[in-house]
Amino acid sequence: MRIITGKAKGLKLITPKNSDVRPTSDRVKESLFSIIGSKICGAVVLDLFAGTGNLGLEAWSRGAEKITFVDESRASLKIIQGNTVKARAENDAVIINACVLKAIAELESKGKSFDFVFCDPPYDKGWPEKVIRQFLKHRIVKAGGYLVLEYSAREKLPTLPSEVTEVRTEKYGDTRVSFLNWQ
Image 1 (cartoon, one colour):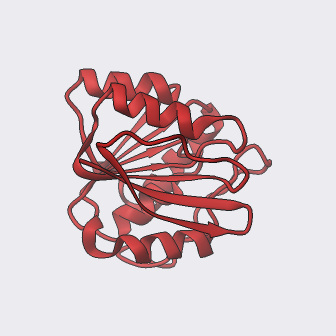
Image 2: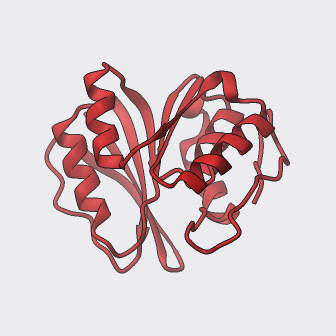
């Protein structure tokens, strides 16, 4: 696993030694950042279920201004910390040890908001619906911002309210990636 392009291009990231974390493949990552394009420049990014920090660090390498990583696994947090230091992104990064749903509420209470939220939860556990519901309750995706949600191709997105538009959904093997725009 590596950073594909930008200021940290080619950097090999630290990966877990077990299969508890399922990092986004380089193929899927390259595709989703091709779709996002230059909109990532200057963005404030949230990486939920961050695992290795792969998506947040790719966004930072491509020009995102700030990244916040959230994961509740201490092993993942150690890997994210190592990868952030390795990329020399530690001055632009915040790492939070918390359950994702609680972190979303806490970030709102601190007045934080984000242009892009990358969310790559465990597959087949109902997370897409839980996360979308939590974002509707706690408005931390900026108006015009995006939730980029990666989930199992076996799962379906819930019915979206009028303030959320499914801009695009792509399928890569057993993975779907949906780009949801917040109004």
